[in-house]
Length: 100
Image (cartoon, rainbow, N blue to C red; front, top):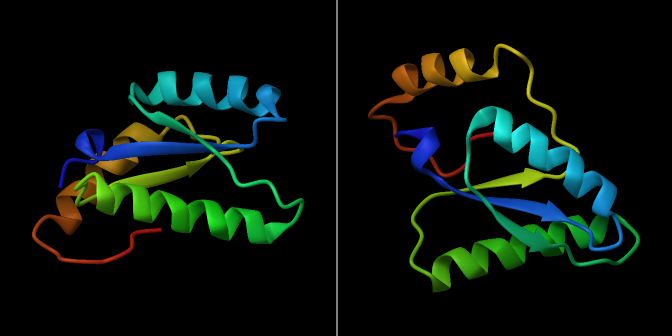
């Protein structure tokens, strides 16, 4: 698996454009393309779960075999790129349903 090629969704509440601005710079650092997903806003953690389920349904409808869901408060450490490269080598050939 090449993590750089996995389709990515960034979950963001429309009422939090500040957090979207922050994650945009993180995604630029990783050099990743992504699709913004407007989060389901329930003012509790249930909205987060509903958003992830909606993304999975969207991915299935679009025939995407692999997706990465990234929350808008994600921060990548300076070593993230090299760590992901190492992880890719270790998981090559391993089949899994969820990688967290």
